[in-house]
Image (cartoon, rainbow, N blue to C red; front, side, top):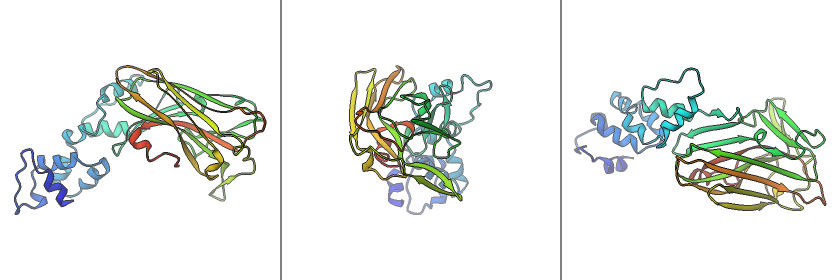
Length: 291
């Protein structure tokens, strides 16, 4: 780290071979911290009082905030009776990192704290699902710690799988984003305090692939296919549907997404549906086909 620090000692920070890290002026420390991730900044705050003061500097945290954070705050808290009073950019950052529900409580937004950008999750309850209210086909698993929404949809058996959803995004900073379906083969549960999963009803996913599609109001359209049985049962998988571009954060982006397997020559079942997950493409690389 020493070499990295010495390379950043500019912008008014004079260097001396006799200067220890404890003697660095606060503006130099702030410059160093601004190049680090949020968790690293908080860890270095314990070095000494200068680092502690610099770690709370607006100059450090301003670079960690999305450029449209004012818009995000106004829209996230405009329906609250009391809007939070922010004393610093660090406090704003911490607030945005906490998941915030919107759209009736079945959508969630947060700022990924280690440089990941704005992320969005959409519960299955916001989607149109064929047969979802027929208990012969689907069951609703409530109070589940497997989902950030505490609820998952479990497909027992059906001939026709069709899940569709739409989303209007008015708050994403300009950039490229990835969209995923979060799925799981087998029904998870707890037994004697341990996580277990039942794969008895898992069937039919090796016959034909599931087709995923994504389209945006800006004319983008992508589709892909996956055989769900190619992934291990008992593990949540993020199936990458595709990427889309937000060119202007001041204009809404409308998305339509779906997953279908409508070959009626065989039934399929034993699958859990949790949510759709949206994140910047850089962060999405860590999620592709991983839990």
